[in-house]
Image (cartoon, rainbow, N blue to C red; front, side, top):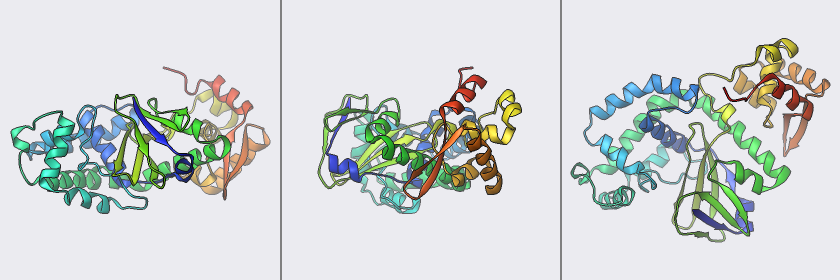
Length: 326
């Protein structure tokens, strides 16, 4: 399994950060897979997969480049650099473009597990990779970035609150099915059979949520490490929201029921406005009713006030059938 040895000080300094590049690469992985994990991803694919495939058809290098770079168990380093905190998409993709031709080919041989297809034995691979990533950003991610950013910020605030409440172990266990805090400074980052990596004191450890249901890890030398993980499932449905059961809506009202279904994870009023599309005043009024009924409670995380379901709220939502397998 992939095992990282992380000192206590490094973990304490680690941060959740936004990465437009990680969101773009995750979207490229979804386009490459061609199948979504929930209705939101399927709707997005219906809108963008034809254009992506047309883009590949127009460039005989693009399809083998993506297939080789993503690989089966290793992503080509030059194709997916580790974003810095606060770095724009353009700044990260410029590092893809600046990679040397031999470096790109060497990275691709690692992800391919051997020799390269003849079509990839060329010197313009970094430029072609940057051009394809820019296409994915401009055509399939940037139009939705304002909403996706709010969704990702909601995830980061919720997980930060969980760190403040219960420590890092529970958060690391919940990032995706392959991650687990093993204790004694050991963090399992995936289930692949790679040698352990010791993260040196002073290294930067970043956690980056993405809306597609995918994950990977990356690093730059020994200075910066990143864990990319899928954001909370209920928030990741970018094109359609989880339906509210009619019975729950009839009992507490459709708008309040929508808030209650979201509040299995702590969220602020600002985040609820972003995710639901309801006005700030409406969200505030509905939260007051839910608070008075004992269905949600307030918690403070730093400067933020977060709302989350109480045990009574959990019982009500569970009884309504939200989240049950269909």
